[in-house]
View: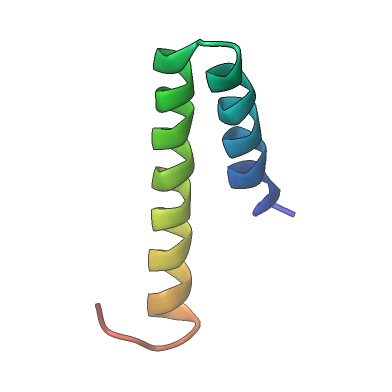
Amino acid sequence: MYMFFPFLTAFIGLILVWFEKRLVGLILLAITVGTLMVWFYFHATDHLNISL
């Protein structure tokens, strides 16, 4: 359920860029990328036993 958040922020950012709100769209893109990086780091290190 918590993985819905990056898709939601990416979709809202896409809509904002469509309506020419580029700065807010880029901020939401940064939030999306940050969330995906934290999610991947957590799952890659804990659940897959990969040393990064």
